[in-house]
Image (cartoon, rainbow, N blue to C red; front, side, top):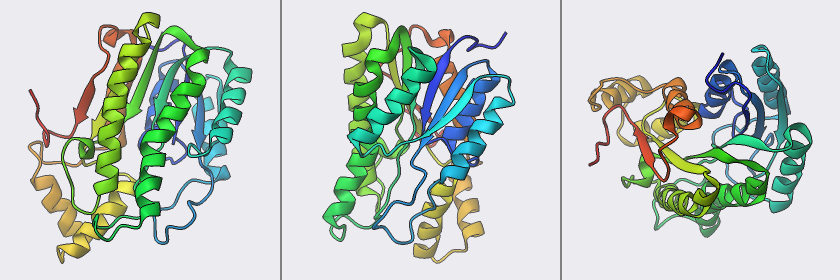
Amino acid sequence: MGRLEGKKALVTGAAKRTGIGFAIAQKFASEGADVIVADLAKPIEGFQGYVRTSDAGDLENAARELGKFGVMAASVSVDITDPESIKAMAKVVAERFGKFDLLVNNAGGSPGTSTLLAMEEKAWFYNFDLNLHGAFRVIREVAPRLNDGASIINMASRAGKVPSAFLGAYCASKAALIMMTKVFALELSPRKIRVNAVCPGQIVTELGLWGWKLKAFAEKLSEEEYHKALADRLPLKKLGAPEDVANVVLFLASDESSYMTGQAINVTGGQLMEL
């Protein structure tokens, strides 16, 4: 029997096979959970050159892949910057699951990257809408559908604790997400709903590779040279994989973490160490 046998989960931002969200959904399914994956399934408009978002085919393929574990797997498109889209997603979840046990707010990103002084206002506000307000909207909408004793995991970032040039809006929005996680942990505790955040560091995903490409250019290095230099700066001397994050999320989703709430756990290869 898997650690999540009989559980039902919703994971946003989970359509890309190379991403953290899909790795989490796959881990959940392998441990016996029924899973609904949700994602934007269309390009983000107004931000040229940004990393490719998922499409409807990615969503369908993700659900099909998860179904191979013998669990119920489904997909739904959602724009977490649109309250009506979130309500439509919640309706699908209610029809499929009734009440459910696990929510992972993984959807996010960093479009419009630039220095703060050069950043357009629409990019600043969109980062907050995507990384903070989206998770707020999803939790607010689906909380009544969560079973008592459920677990919510918000995908924050090392960038929410340590500043990074050119990622000011992303850093600030992820820092706010960490504090919002703690407040929700307090407010949902009467229902024994645990709320925690995970803060990945240097993880090899399409979004990570896109950001590193920009930084490699700024440092006049090839992408391969930058990747090696980045790994060499880490205490564990290697870049992380989506599965490294998924393993921590699995722990937070399982009963093994039943006495943990309001935490922001680093998955950074030792890049960030805190008291």
